Amino acid sequence: MIPPDTQGPAWSPYLVGASIGVLSWLTFYVSDKPIGASSFYAQVAGLLGKLLAQRHTASLTYFKDNPPRVGWEFVFVVSIVLGAAIAAFTGGEFTNEWLPPMWAARFGDSIALRAAVAFGGGLLMAFGARLAGGCTSGHGISGTLQLSVGSWIAVICFFLGGVAVAVPLFTL
Amino acid sequence: MIASGKAFIPQTEKHAPPVAVTSQLVNGAVFGLAFGFLLQKGGVGKYPVLMGQLLLQDWTVAKVMLSAIVVGMVGIFTLHRFAQLNLRIKPTRIGANIIGGLIFGAGFALVGYCPGTAAAALGQGNWDALFGIAGLIAGSWSFAELSGWTKRTVETWGDLGKVQLPSLLHVPRGLFVTGFAVILTLILELLHRFAPR
Image (tube, each protein chain N blue to C red):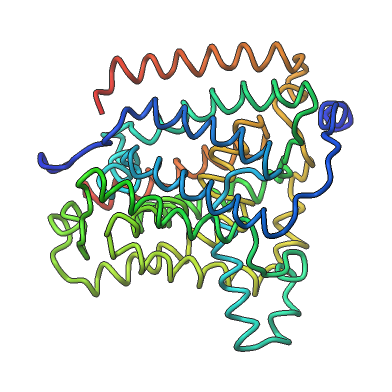
């Protein structure tokens, strides 16, 4: 299923994982923050909402509990894009492609199809993350390493749900 | 069980003045830069690596996550023991964790990137991540629209509060962390032996 030309990780996954573990010590120690990504998208949604429909946005329970603002989590995720770009350029791995070859091999080269599926998937994923209380970073790394019971339940369900959809998508 | 859990939460708290807003933004930028760099070097911004994990054919994601958990856990609990940091534990809400988790997973399989790795994928030039990011913003909005209802219903199902595994299992925290680090390392060893990727 995986095309033979597909590259794996540039560095050892154990080294990268251990480094992310050390990075989590630093975010807790220096910034009093766990590593997390999904709340960024909610903040962007809230900031856009404040521009388009301020009173309605302010009336929504989630935004009352989590007022949208540009804070640590926001710049953290924006900087991920830059950090990954630096890593890709320095490692000669910048892809500059609209379709992953593995996707195109299975579903053809329609960008519109990929856009529709990725948009729908992103919508479900953010809804699920907000309901579950976090994503593969907030629950999957920060919550699990603090031994939070809910984070372990959530991350197991992330992968159960993922396998249940990915396997038929690519094998049936 | 829940009452005993509370005794485990903040045994020690760091007493420090709150970090200034501007330095928090600078810190967030530096840490985000490092996280994005590591995600890309770990290969987890790549569609076939992430889908390969969900197809159980490429175990890179599990290797990265479990390594991060072992190293992170040992350091965080050691620093917490000496009152050098605060824990930031999300509440356990069994219904919301399960239902939200399964919905998240289904979406993850359709996008092929998760919220953090979508940002990394974009950075390395996978422009299709933009569609996923647009969906993530739309999905966050959709949840906010329904958040009054979910807060009254799903989020109350099996709400245990901020409970951790050691207190749930009635094991002393230090012993649990040590034993769990050994178990997770053994799982990593098995993955290394039996999953070349």
